[in-house]
Image (cartoon, rainbow, N blue to C red; front, side, top):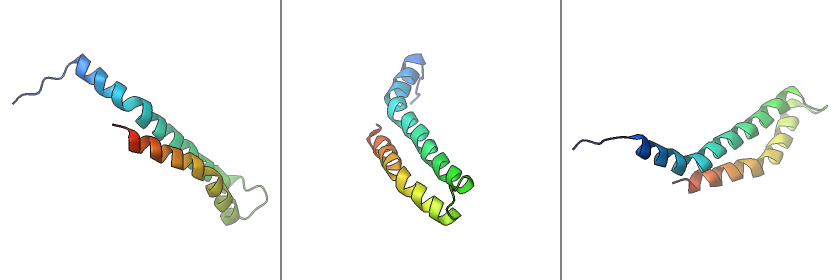
Length: 73
C-alpha cells in the first residue's frame, strides 16, 4: 500500500498539532529559562534557595504546558 502525501495532508497535520503542541513547547522553554535565570540572578539568595523559589513560581506554567501537550491530538 502506497501512501501519497500532498500539501493538503501536510497542512491538516500541522494545523491539528500546531496550536497546542507548539505553544506547549514555547511555554516549557519559558519555564526552563526562568529556572536557569534563577541560577544566575539569585536576588541575594543562595543558588539552591533561588532555584526552589523559581521552581514554585514556574509550576503553574509547567502545569499549563503539560495540559496543552496532553490534549494535543
